[in-house]
Image (cartoon, rainbow, N blue to C red; front, side, top):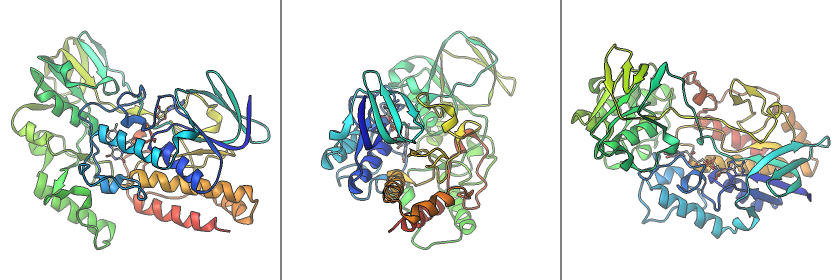
Length: 427
Ligand SMILES: Cc1cc2nc3c(=O)[nH]c(=O)nc-3n(C[C@H](O)[C@H](O)[C@H](O)COP(=O)(O)OP(=O)(O)OC[C@H]3O[C@@H](n4cnc5c(N)ncnc54)[C@H](O)[C@@H]3O)c2cc1C
């Protein structure tokens, strides 16, 4: 057992793990990282077994709204970079700040255990480490969510996690189930390879094009801070000018207002539907042989079904009692702090526009908390008390009641609170 009692362990070297490492470095807190893959970048490294990106994957938020502020992406990087550009970016970031030196690569964390004195043990395949605490940065988009369907499909059935290359669709009749951001990317990929391609959807969505008036959509507006309802009204009007009504393209009417769920950022899907290259089908009733029966009593034969049905949170290495689960989601103060001591989560949040800088700010709060605790100052005790309160981070937005939305926050409210708590820990 390696004794490192002043050191914090980070599980994962994706964007969140790196954001944590950089903050530990800045705040002079010793850390050791564990990454199951051979390098940094998390799911943006297509060769990482954990990765859910595919050859055509690009950011859906623009680079300026996503990058780490202290390390902007180069001018020659596209507005919406590819996974390859992003993987290089994270490698450059880690090299620039010399973060890799403190990571153990090819090192899967199998188990973490809390001791009576609130220190922790980290177990990898070959070694045990006795550390001060743990930061979980293992990502949210790796463990496939596979819904159960009535009947059996005798063709090929895969989850988007396994999908990398559109060649698998060559000359096949393709059905993509689910119209989230990955589902919409993949159905567009299939257009130029498949014999035919359909997308099955249960609910309606709001579609945002990647560019509005020649600028990345998330960089348009925002100069004047408007009340949320007025902003939503104006944004909905702008969207209806650019994308029209998705119902005209065969999608169901959205059962939620703009911003109550993550919008679909895709400029191509409506284009291909309009050209008859993609057809929109209703939700699934059942499978039989190679036939899919839809909720509107139609049926169609397919060769391959791709489930773009999302991901589940997954923490196989820690006792559930530390996760403070509500349903499937850890209930954490500020999406970071469970009631268990010396345990922190980073990256367990979704919010429109939060980017990697949002994860970075989480790392800053974690580091400040640890420093205040180590100095045993009163501000830390006050912050522990504050953690017992129930914060509303929704900004008054009525988010859809779905598992994937259970850790969704309003970016502005969340970042404001982070700043407030960071300041409260100054001593
Ligand atoms: C197609 C696609 C498009 C996206 N577009 C955007 C976008 O435009 N903007 C945006 O902000 N986000 C986007 N995302 C979300 C994406 O999740 C984040 O950008 C980011 O990758 C999250 O970083 P992370 O470090 O939290 O998790 P990950 O990138 O998933 O990294 C987690 C790391 O932990 C490692 N790990 C896991 N378990 C263990 C273990 N037990 N032991 C050791 N190591 C372990 C993994 O190998 C991995 O390297 C997109 C995601 C996808 C799939």
